[in-house]
Image (cartoon, rainbow, N blue to C red; front, side, top):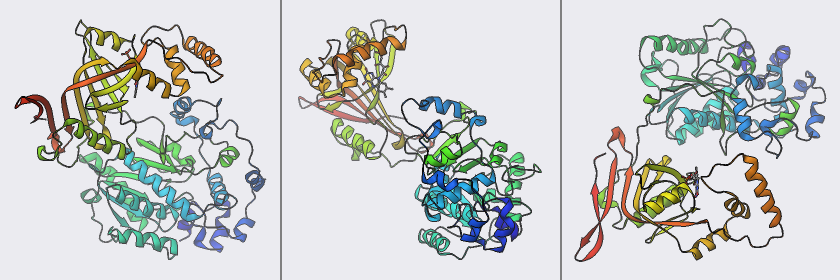
Amino acid sequence: MWWLLRKGRTMTCLLFTQSLLLTSNAHSYSYISKPSRSFHNHIHYPNLSSAFLHPIASSAIFAFSSKPGSESRTGSLKSMQNPESISYLTQREAAEIDEALMGPLGFSVDQLMELAGLSVAAAITEVYKPSEHNRVLAICGPGNNGGDGLVAARHLHHFGYKPAICYPKRTPKALYDGLVTQLESLSVPFISVEDLPLDLSEGFDIIVDAMFGFSYHGFPRPPFDGLIQMLISLRNYDQTRQKSPVIVSVDIPSGWHVEEGDVGGEGIKPDMLVSLTAPKLCAKKFSGPHHFLGGRFVPPVIAEKYKLRLPPYPGTSMCVRIGKPPKIDVSALRENYISPEFLEEEVGSDPIDQFRKWFEEAVGAGLREPNAMALSTAGKNGNVSSRMVLLKGFDENGFVWYTNYESRKARELSENPHASLLFYWDGLNRQVRVEGSVQKVPDKESEQYFHGRPRGSQIGAIVSNQSTVVPGRNVLYELYKELEEKYSDGSVIPKPKHWGGYRLKPELFEFWQGQKSRLHDRLRYSPEESNGKRAWKIDRLAP
Ligand SMILES: Cc1cc2nc3c(=O)[nH]c(=O)nc-3n(C[C@H](O)[C@H](O)[C@H](O)COP(=O)(O)O)c2cc1C
């Protein structure tokens, strides 16, 4: 078992392997369970606790800094695409960070495991959609790395995947018992090593390698040696056949040296590596297409202490890609949409009601800017142009957006009032097309909307002669500063004449719902006269 004990991330460092073996296997984990006194006694952390207790003012660790004046987010992301500019941790540093998180920084192992497992599941969903990679096998080791795998499997279940677990050496502790119970309550099957199909590619689309964490050395013992071998042979299989499951390694590809990587060159070659907290040195040797960072819990004081340079996490995401995304064959990019059927008998007779329903569902689904729409216009020469604008209101009178009345779109609309709007709601596999003629909204309405905007946007609208050539960004900035100063007393900013709203009065709607095998639903609403009254005719169009 000694090699297993050393594999866990909790193992503070190689130097302490011996002493750990003499204490307990509680330390064989990725993040340590609360370190025992004796454990502490073996470790020399120069000024570590004082650094944590007296956080240094945030400085140049831009990855964790969102302060004005720090490197911009885009700048950070750009430089972070170069894996060379990212911090990689030695085994010792990784262990020290775990120890600090679990000590002076007040985290519990359960919390870190939950966040790590969630990060792994989130990274998987970024690349492998459940519609195409549904069947997951999580192979879990006895330590915290295995715990991460159990947590990831639970989240994957909730994300729509079908996980199964191979967990041959269960750890008899409440934390792990709880994770097993949670999975059992979801009817996630546990498969013994003996019951695994000899050829994993037959039963699974994704294999989560959560066997061993970050202090592995030596030779894996049964059954993990055999399991690792099965994953290695998937690669050989891949060379002879079309499709084999992808391998996702949690923090360290099992069997790799934490700092040296795949020393003999014959180890697991994962397709995805999800580094936790920060990548370990072995991750430099990872050559698969998808390297992600997870474990969004590193406080600035740790980043400061270890001079960590890591990419910022986007929005509320639990993971972030490290390095460049792989080269993509654009022609091979396709989604198989799976949606509820969209039938004539279920839609509203009034397209505005139907639009409202879908719009509310887009908002409810938490989609980003569900009111963003592509507006297409064509001037008198017939050339068409499209751009995104934001819907600012809709009702039976039409769809409203605001813009500059001297912009290209405005010129084209003055020449030809016919336009088309297109909404695309990705997460719901939906698009809505609205076509009609456009008019300016009454000035009073524009006036009212203008004054409800943030003052910065009001000034921006005055400053920008939209669609004209500008000699440089600084010109706009100078003008903006001038006006900001001018209106710094809080006085009313007058709406410029060249700014206002447009309203498109719909003459045609098309609601599109993506379906399997390209058999999409398309329902078109077009106006017709019925008993002298204007009504909407609904037709199904071929996809
Ligand atoms: C998501 C999104 C929303 C936008 N919303 C507006 C808007 O509401 N009004 C606007 O004038 N420009 C908006 N823009 C900028 C336009 O796409 C476009 O660059 C600008 O209106 C100039 O277009 P034009 O030169 O074709 O007239 C938006 C851009 C994006 C990406």
